Image 1 (cartoon, rainbow, N blue to C red):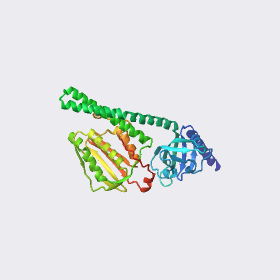
Image 2: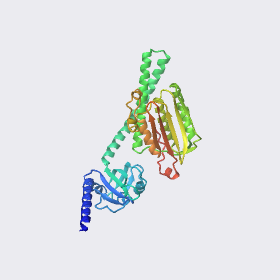
Image 3: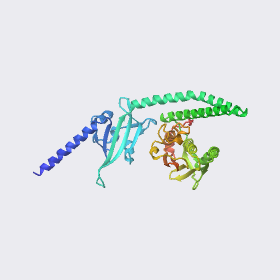
Image 4: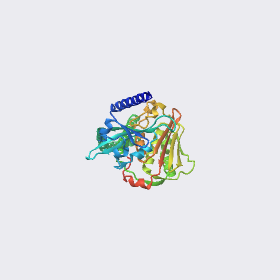
Length: 382
């Protein structure tokens, strides 16, 4: 009689297992369940197909899923990535190569799993795999079109901007009617906006295609921030704003792409100038462990909590009427997030509606070994 409860429990466990298999086999994504040693304990048919294998349970994930970085062309140490994953992560830039020379672009999602509470709880990881080769192909065609179009539009836009600027200057000197002057001024503002949009699109296209080169150099962070204050002071004065640098102590030197750090901070400052009507814009640079944290805070209109999660997405512009009244492309902060990723920087934002916003950028020093891996180029952000 004592064997009956055990038999019943075994049957129930087998039924649960079969239900789980049926569930994951109905999914359109590949599913891999790993134990805490990164050994595969469960997989579905889609995963087997993507990995071109018939039996993978019991094997180490690194043995069956060999990935390469699409942009750098370097192999990915997947087990190292997994063991350093504390929160769910996702990546669209990895590729799997097959023995016959073919390859697939993959979306990979890795999530740590904790079963139960306390030290006895079994832990592991769940990996979702999706074939995004077709999506990547479409994205590359789109980026190629944007790149060509933005390149071809640069010259006519530059000619138009110069011609309108000259006409506006002559109209002001000759005392032409205010109606004509205002019309020329509006046209000039719009052509400058169009030029900025083309520059943003060009930069965005190169960033998404991994074609932004990076020159790594050692520079003084305090001098960089002071130069930004100096360059933006005229615009701040025009709006009746203060722009100041308030270091707690000298931030010191930093080894990374000076160009990209400056571009990111300039985007923060430009937004602060646009959306601050009174008060001040404050810049800080604090030395942190193996890097420097830059902070740009303002007393502007702020950002509603409901919109903060979308702030760094492509073409996003706030629904706030005060934002709608200011020209913009909705690309600045998206490009900023791309540049930050290139230099392994971390972005943070804190904002309160009608009180102001604070953007922070932590930039780590790039080690000598990392320098050697970076494509050195004279390419600059337009």
